[in-house]
Length: 195
Image (cartoon, rainbow, N blue to C red; front, side, top):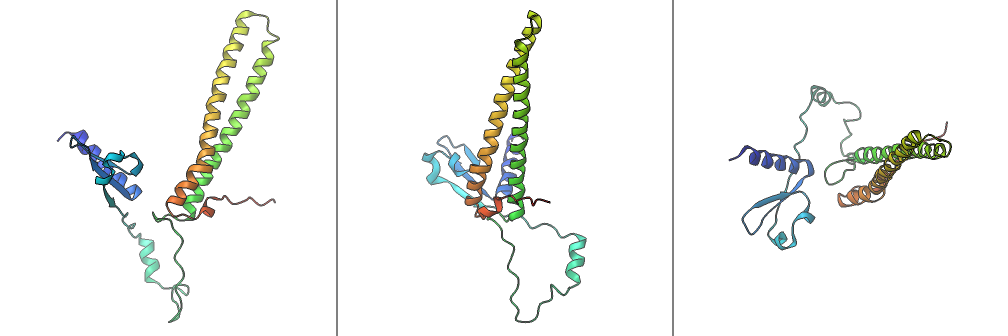
């Protein structure tokens, strides 16, 4: 069996562990396919899809965990008949509010950085356009025109990145959270308090 086939199979196997669900189907030629996204399977093969739910293994205990569990404290020893504390909220993959807030914070930071970069590029572009009117030397004017064109392309690319970050924050993350059973409130960033 070729090495690349084994590597592909193993990589798909590990993807299943990461996402928790893997789908397998076979086409008319007998080729077997794996995916973690049911929408990627052609509709004609969807009735024959095999789904396997993969649950991640719990993390191995560290020595500090073992020491903490060996010495009961006042908060861990409850009175008989007391109601145990509610488990921490989690989505279907076992991730809690911290994961979703970090994700939202990451994309919010990306958006802010792209907005600042666009503003910086726009200032440079406006300055280059302003200079074009005052330069008489054709060689220098050509350099300014070339720089203006480069800045226009950079601004267009930054606009694409801004739209991608906005789509992630306002559409993709909320949809993913809803599909995975996460509370939409987990995506809201904490409001900084004025000092």
